Every structure is written in structure tokens, then in C-alpha cells.
Amino acid sequence: MLDNREWAIIRELMPLDDPSHTFIGDDCAVWRDQKLLVTTDHMAEGVHFDLSFMPPDAVGWRLMAANASDIIAMGSRPTHFTLNLALPADRQEAARGIIAGIVRFAKAHGIVCIGGDTTGGEAFFIGATMFGPLPERPLLRSGARPGDRIFLAGEPGLSKAGLLRLQRGMNDDNAATRRFLYPDPLGQIPLLGAPSAAIDLSDSLVSELTLLANASGVSMELATERIPVHPLVAQTARELNLPLTDLLLTSGEEFFLIVTAPGAMPGWHEIGLVTERRTDALTIRDNGVPLNPARLPVWDHFGR
Image 1 (cartoon, rainbow, N blue to C red):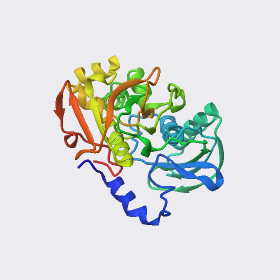
Image 2: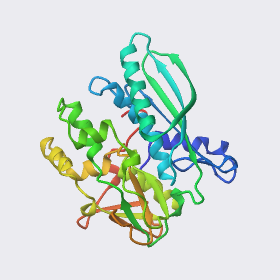
Image 3: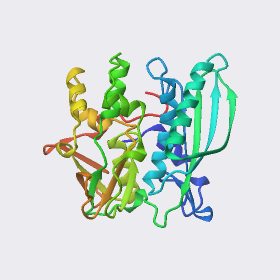
């Protein structure tokens, strides 16, 4: 069974939720009383980012992108946020860089800071809570139905390819490193058509499809040969002697949408099909040959 420690903790918290499960289980909490979507993400140095190969402004930018992506996955746009920062006192230049990235993202997309808190810390620990207006019909993870098709808004693998290149000192400025350092969830292809369910690609394609399937009580069939491949992803797989399929299936922090829909989604990439619930939430086939999702590493928010 595909699982990780974050999912286990969420299950432990579920009894604190209201009986209708209004708040926990989607990319955002649906706060109907206030007509708001609410999400929160935080990043810990050494787990979520490494300043030895990342510019500080990219860290701040990525924090904002992670939160904004959740709001977009529910069919809205972010408008306001609060910010919490733990900053080492002896690393002021890096702190200013992180804050500059946060400010640049907020200004670029018209998102207003309405408060927060700062404190000292042994290492950087940054978090944001973001708000967006509640749409009339928010996109949920639980709406997928048998017969729906699965679509991607972009080409997966670029973010992980960028990370691997940066970790190895390949500091070339290209689409892969830019996707990893400065993802822009608000710049993706717009939602056209009538999606039944949605999730943002933050952990991995395998993880997100598993979450969608379990939330909707269905199973998903993924055909790897239908996944769009960016030339830089293929190039990185060759240069680093990595299986291309693994790179496509395990790349996270892409911050574009995965949706299911009963009909066509113009401009989107169709990669699979929703079926009646089976034993496995997710079935992966590579040109008809079954792949075992359990052998693929999923992102662990506590580190590997």
C-alpha cells in the first residue's frame, strides 16, 4: 500500500474534524461560513530546501507557490496571506533574500500580507497561510467518477530534473532549474471544460493519483506512454542514467493541476482513465506492461 508519514498524521487528526469532514481532505479547507478557501504550508531548512545550492529568494518564492497552488487546485485564486518566519540571527543576508522572494511573488500576483509572526531559530523555518474566495462550485478531490479521463496541465519531471541538476552542480539556467526554483502555479493553462475532481502536483504523480482515487472511492489507470515528456527531462534522465519513467512518476513540486473530467479538456494532456474501485487505487502500465507503484519513492515531508 502506497503511504507516507504525513498521511498517517492526517488520519490521526481526522477525529478533530467536524462530522461532515468539511475542512480536512482537500487541497484547502472549505470555510463556507466565511466563504473562504484556506490553506497552509511551511518549509524547514534541511528538509524542504537547501541554501547550499538554492538562492534564498527562490525559497521564499516556492513557499508562496506551494500555498497558491492549493488555492488554484480548488478553482479559485489567492488574495491574502499571513506569514510566520523563524530566522537565525547570524544569517541576515539569507533572511533578506527569502523575504524578497516572498514579496516578489506576492506583488507579481496581487496577494496581500495581512499579518504573521517572526522569531529566532537555529535554522530557517518559514510558513504561510493563504486565503482565496470560495467559488460557487469548489473543485474537490472526491468528485472523480468511473469513466472520467485523467488530464495534466503540464509536463511532469521538470522540477525533479532541476533539483537533481542543481544538487550535482549543473547550474545551467534552463526550464528544469527554473521550474524547481521559481514555479508559477498561476501561469499554467486555464481550466477549460468541466472537471469533476482536481489536485495539484506537489508530491508526485503517483501520490496525487492515489489521493484522488481514495478520496473519490474509485481506481485510476495511468498509461506512462501518454505522459508528456519535456526534452530536458529526457536529457536529464540520459545524463544521470536514471529511468525516465521514474523521473516522470516521482517528480514533485511541479505545482500544476491534475484533473479528472467526463469529456475533453482542450489543451490538456490526457494520461489515463478512472475506473470502478478495485483492489489497487492506482494501476500503472508502461506500454501495456504493469509497473508496481510501491517500488517508486514518494515524497516524505519528514525526509527520507
